[in-house]
Image 1 (cartoon, rainbow, N blue to C red):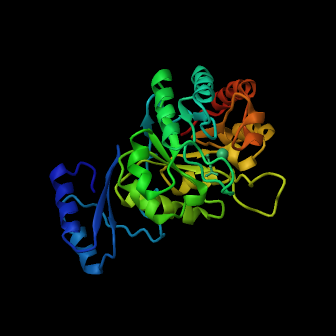
Image 2: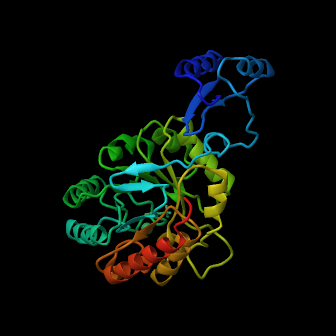
Image 3: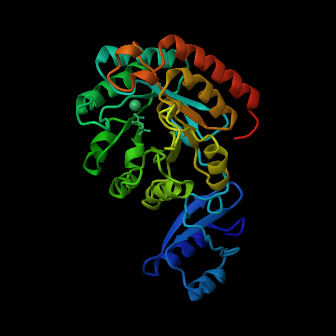
Length: 334
Ligand code: PEP
Ligand code: MN
């Protein structure tokens, strides 16, 4: 739309778009201009009709498969506000907590340190997607209740994974952000279901997903009308077996170029080794990530899930100090 176009003109265009069967209009209101993203097959006749409506500046085709996640659709960064955290802004956000919630004591002790160290969001898994059915698969709803308690006690928002479409509303009633794990990143029914929410979704990259496939997974959520998607690079499968996965830090600048969505990194699940979590965290911030998500445990050696990658409290304290230093050093652009 032309700058200065009126609300009535914008409404009229959106209504006209949606009067055509199969077309949807998605609004992006920026400081500079308003864009109406038309999703669906648009014929040359409809394009011509749109071009002549009052307030319309131009009709541009986005030829890439992704539409709503692209910079062409929305030039400015999407920022997502949760509690005191702004994800996608200038300051990187730290999300930390246990991989799996094991007990009230374990969660509360970790939440206390997470809050004290200035991390803005607490993580904790209650429904755990485990490679083996014999591994600890989480406390389920009991864990979610503990997570809500910890959130209240320490005044900190919480993120947790949802694994199945039937659980989405239930998990959303306990969590401030819902996580879609790497193994579900192309579970399209689940993506559609969280697209119906109006709550932030942390979308992990599938460990065999290309950037385009990952952005198309995000597109499912955006297309459902949920504009609050946070992308998370969590390592991909390569021939290298030393680390658990291979962390792809190039994903950060590439995604920032292609998309307006915030992007964070998970140094814990990508490396699988606690000694590598601090260097990869520092690297993530240095390449411009909007945040990091970390596994922290009161006693890493006894952790029921992903023990090898969990940070002790001392290591976590040391990490947050250094992350702040890097972040201050590079604070130049969002
Ligand atoms: C997690 O964050 O707890 C998790 C299981 O991550 P991923 O889906 O990236 O393996
Ligand atoms: Mn884990």
